[in-house]
Image 1 (tube, rainbow, N blue to C red):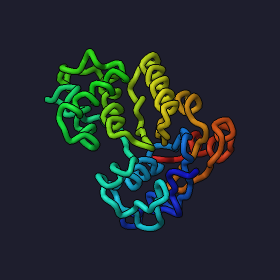
Image 2 (image 1 turned 90 degrees about the vertical axis):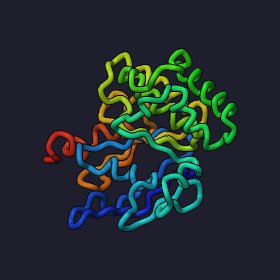
Image 3 (image 1 turned 135 degrees about the horizontal axis):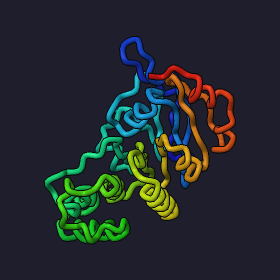
Image 4 (image 1 turned 180 degrees about the horizontal axis):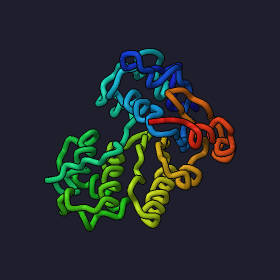
Length: 239
C-alpha cells in the first residue's frame, strides 16, 4: 500500500523551479533512498511533505488523505515526521526531557511521558545519558537523539535528512543498524543521504532528483548504473 505519494509536486522560488513536477511514492514498510547532487531539491521535498513549506503546485498524500496545506503539527499527528540536516537539540534540557517533548503527543500525563521517553532511550542505548545536558553530547549521540525525539511521536513514516553526515564509519554502521531495527518495528523510512554505502545498504528503492526533476526510480543497483544518474553525479554542474 502506498503510504506517502507525491503527485506532480512543484515548488518555485520566483523564477527558480526548485522542484518541477516530481511524482513518486513510498510503500508501507519500504525504505526509500532519495538522492541527488547538492541543490537538487531533496530537502525542499522533505519540507513540503512535513508541512514546513507549501507546494506551488501538485498534491501530497499520506495514509490515504491529502496533506499539502496542512500544518507541521497536524502532519506529525497523522504519523509523518522528519529529522533535520543540522541537529538542534534543546541544548540546556536533559536528554530525557528532549525525548519527552515528542512523547507528549500521545501522553498528557508527565509521568506517563517520562516512562515512554525512558523506553525510547533504552531502545536507542541512551538510557545512561538520560540526565545529561543535550548540548554536551557528541555529534554521533546528538544524531541518535534527533532520531529518538521523532520516534517518540510513534510515527508511521520517518524522513531522515542526512542523519549520517559527519559520522565515522563505525558510527555510521551503528546508525544503519538502528534504522534497520526501526524498519523491522514497522516504521517506513524515506532517507536523504549522500553516503552511497548507506543508501545501498538500507534502500529497497532509490529515487534520484537532479535540477528539481526526477531522473530515476529503481532498485539501488539499477539506479547506480543508470547513465543519467552517473551523469548527474559526475558530469553535472550543480551548485
